[in-house]
Length: 551
RNA sequence: UGGGGCGUCGCCAAGUGGUUAAGGCAGCGGGUUUUGAUCCCGCCACUCGGAGGUUCGACUCCUCCCGCCCCAGCCA
Image (tube, rainbow, N blue to C red; front, side, top):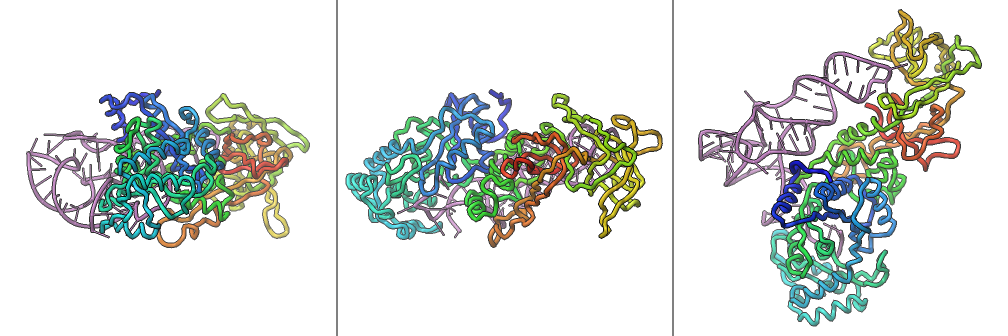
């Protein structure tokens, strides 16, 4: 258990006070996703918070699926969510829980409220109910069914349950206050009829509890002490408390709200993410451009980076927009220490070293990491013909050393982990394009300074032309071109970045990358962080996703 | 408009009557470097949405004003 020297957010303050006052002896939290989509980075913040609080105070955290609406939920989502939370590195208490496990108990409690005269079967249809509800400024009016005898409501509720009533014809409502300034308290629906199979309970039920009637009770059943949710549920809290107060629950959980995470250039709304997937604007929920946990994973973002980022975020009631650069900082920060180094030439330009004997080969070695000796060294075959990146050569010899620290005709450059070389001559094809560089190498410069008078302009990456592998690189950029794609007029789809994916084929990578494995992080030196993409790789040609470039 | 919540540096954010108003990101300047990476050093809010007031003293208390977000699903 991690010690909390001093509470750093308001929820920790509350928990500490509860612990100190003896109101709570063991902290129990929960992460309660609805299995109607994949988890995204916003959920990651909630996961880190809930599991983190439990860990910090020696308590436990449940993973509970809030599956009260079979219309939108499925087992595919349940499985994906379980995988994502596990990947993030958290362990929930016992087995995953499901709201649907509590349907019978919830139903009993509904009957209890009816018997107490605190709930009734209402026959207003959706439209009528809206009219009766009033508006933000005008009170609602009582349903004509509000004073229906409990016995009658009980009988009708049972009819609803067994499927004898048509969908939409009736609801069970809590009898609270149609004139409440809080619209949520104007006799909210507790049960609605949905003659629909549920992914876990099958056709056992024809009615399903609403979020408001379910959530607090689920918390109580599990002994949750601190039910942490996002700000938009603040107006539901009085209702949460009304149910916990009026029902004979085993304990009384408390709800606390914090501001959800918003990231610029990103959309974090399950509805919109689902739309991107369904309309195939992206390659599924785990498309590397998606802010989903599975997308970030496929992109190459490490679980540690995601966790560090989430932990750096404030838990407060302000709803701000975090700059993507802040997230990227944590990605680079972790990848820099974790990623093994490698070289990959994106846009190959052949360099023939005329003074290096034809057919000769020597094996150079390079560190797996500049400041970690626990990673294995790499073997780099060196030959007369090598590839460098076209961007690392310029035929403009007027470029200053400071401005262009790469290869220029008649000047020297260091091959990373290799020799110092010089460019002697440019070979052009019929169209005038540079097709090859004839150069020379400076002997005895591997790991050694070049002789007096030779000053390499810089260090560039390279690969032996005869000992390298071909690979495809998938370069990703922001999915959206504007900071706030989902605010403002028009559809967020209008702001999709047409250049969010650029595929660079047949890049030349060092031989060791033939053994790259999924889930490993690599830094292609001077380029960026990459990871193997199993989906786009073929047996003879690996594909790598660019997680993020170097700064 | 009714109710709820929030406004501290470009962004995130500590701060709960007496601190030189933390820290991170971004930015800028410099150093190290066989990655223009990492790393290191320095700079970056006389001011806390605004106006009054209480107080010896207010970002912290009071009043009014301004702005933003959430709530009128048989979604969660």
